[in-house]
Length: 164
Image (cartoon, helix red, strand yellow):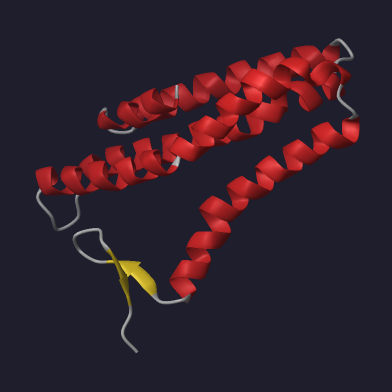
């Protein structure tokens, strides 16, 4: 689904927005159903063991799709084709950065989520918290630290360190 969210951006961001909206409605409906049946906490402690990484990856891939689509919609002073190439390159960087997240989510879904029914609450909550912390660190805190340390991407998209 994450790849579709990225590729949907080629349709002027509408495809990405559609996929994110429909998936959000679907996810919200499932969660509402579980809470309505008194299974809310159990669903959170079970499904979200891998869902924290998986849903975060889909949302982040959606941002890559919006980068792609917005490069078509808002080329600025560049030719539209050049802007599209830049948007595709930047979006692919985001998608490639998600590969470790996909692998971790797949591991958790395959080996942990299936056995989570008898798992202690503290362990399940710890996995959820660590997954969320990893996402926040990898996609928010670490890039801010790099920016403050003087790193930036040059016109070719290669990392450079500012000369002081």
